[in-house]
Length: 107
Ligand code: FES
Image 1 (tube, rainbow, N blue to C red):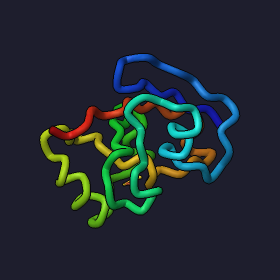
Image 2: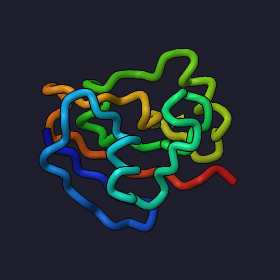
Image 3: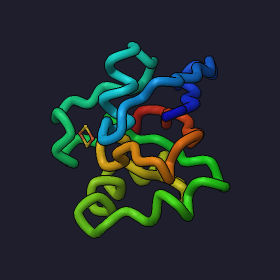
Image 4: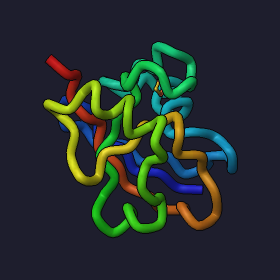
């Protein structure tokens, strides 16, 4: 499966062989994508895997659930309508080709 990720410094990378079930946080960490930390290990408890999902893809990914939304609210200064936590987006065939941009850290 294919994922295009733009890091926090503006560099874009495309990954072609992403396995189904891998989260975007895991993918970003694996490849050292700048700005993806995943401090809590994917537990929806740190928001250091925050990404903005490209408009065209947001409907497929869907809205964050209440727990994720509460976490995003902790980084409200950099939150946007298309914000999601990368650890909560698991790759599936429907998401093949998804494009995301890593969000800057909350100040
Ligand atoms: Fe901590 Fe996603 S890795 S919230």
